[in-house]
Length: 380
Ligand SMILES: Nc1ncnc2c1ncn2[C@@H]1O[C@H](COP(=O)(O)OP(=O)(O)OP(=O)(O)O)[C@@H](O)[C@H]1O
Image 1 (cartoon, rainbow, N blue to C red):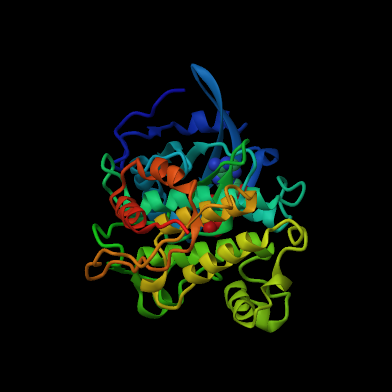
Image 2 (tube, rainbow, N blue to C red; image 1 turned 90 degrees about the vertical axis):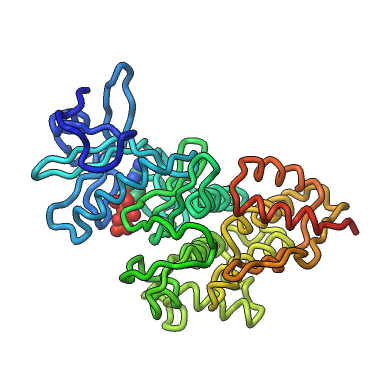
C-alpha cells in the first residue's frame, strides 16, 4: 500500500496517509456486506490492508452529510497520533482527499461494549459474565486515566468528552480500548480540577449536569460519564431508555434513586444477580455513585477508580479476604484545586503489590495517589 503524495494536513507524523484507491481496494469499494457499524460520523467497514503482511482494519468513512464533520476528523487524527496506549484504540492511518475523509483503525473483533450489555448488534452472543464486565471497566478506566494524566514520556493530557459504552471496543481476548476521540480536548495541563470553557458536546444520558449548566469542562465530566457506563454494566440497561417508565428514562437518575432507597438489588441485570458477590457489589455501586456526584470535585479521579475497581475484582474473586488494608484519612495537604482523596475504601493487602505494578508506570497523578495510599494503609 502506498502513501499519498504530500505531507499530512495535521501534526500526525505517526499515522499514515492513504490514497483513496488503497482504501477502496481494502474494503471492496465500500461493500455493504463489510459494514460493521454506523455512528454519527458515518459507516464503519471491516477491511484488509496489505503492507508486507495483511492486516484486518476498521475503516470509518465520513458521511458528507454528517454533522460532525471535518473538525472532528482532524481532532481524531491529532489525538490518536499523540496518545498511543494499549487501552486506547490505535489509529493506523487516514485518507484526506477533496471529497473523502476516512480513518483507518486497528480492528476490534468483538465490537463495542454497549452491544454486549444491551444484547444488540452482530457481536452479541450471550450475557457477559460479571468478572468480564469488571475487567472491561478497568481497561476503559486505565485508558481514561492515561488520557487524563499522561506519563513522564508523554506529558500531554486530554479530556475525552464522549465516554460511553459504544465507545469502548473489545478485542479477541475481551481486552477493552477507548475509541472515538473526535470531541476530545487537549489540556488542561496540571491540576486535576482545572477546566476549559467550551460548547457543550457529548451524548445524552452521559452528560455531566454541571458541565451542561456551566460549560466548564473538566476531567470530572469523563468521570461522570464513566459512572453511567458502570451502571450500564451493572444493570444491563442503556443510559437512556424512553420505553421504560418515565422515572426510569435516565439510568443515572434512576439508579441513584435506587441506591438512596436501598433497592439497588432490583436493578441488577437479571443474568448477573446470582453471580455478583455482595462486598463486590457494594464497592462497585459506591464507586459508580461517587463518579456521579453532583459536585465534580467530589468525584474520584480515574486513577482512584482503577484502583478501587481492582479491589472490587479481588472481592469478587474472594482473594486474601483474611487480610484487609484500611486506608486512613489522607495525610497530605491537598493543593487548591486538587481532588479530595479521602474517599478510599477498605481494600485487600495483596493488592498493594498490584498497586505497585500499576503505579510503576509513573504518571504524576497516579503516583501521588499511590504515595497517599501507601502512606496510610494499616492492617486490621
Ligand atoms: N476499530 C473498530 N473495530 C471494530 N468495530 C468498530 C471499530 N470502530 C468502530 N466500530 C464499530 O462501529 C460502530 C460505530 O462506531 P462510531 O465510532 O462511528 O460510532 P459510535 O461511537 O457508536 O456513535 P457516535 O459516533 O454517534 O458517537 C461502533 O459502535 C463499533 O461497533
